[in-house]
Image (cartoon, rainbow, N blue to C red; front, side):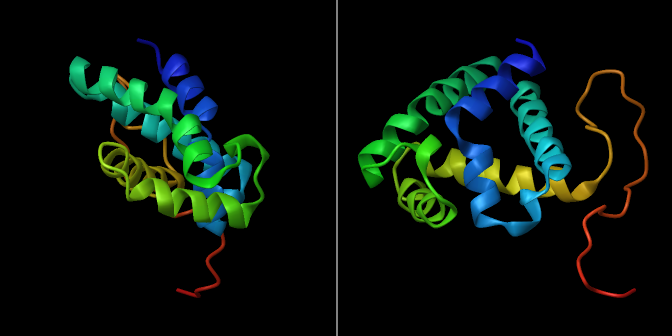
Length: 137
């Protein structure tokens, strides 16, 4: 399964939009792209049954979001996305994957380096976040 197909499944699920609604730092396009790539790479690195289950859950996220909120994930504002994600996080089966994916997205988006899960990639030292945090070193 290619990284692009997993990224497409993530995007179609609406999760990147949810992450951006919940975490302002992920609203930057480059940061969100890194986050999505990192989550896709992490999913691909897992065992095949886990990837198959994750893809199934990703396909069900838009329906679960609609049932939980009465709105489509693609047509929500930031506040509705954040509210809907909180409701989804409480669902059995969906919640643990959503929480894990969100944590991976934050790590991948803020890490600032290349996706270290790409086969054959040379490990590089961490790069400071490219997003201004307002904290002076």
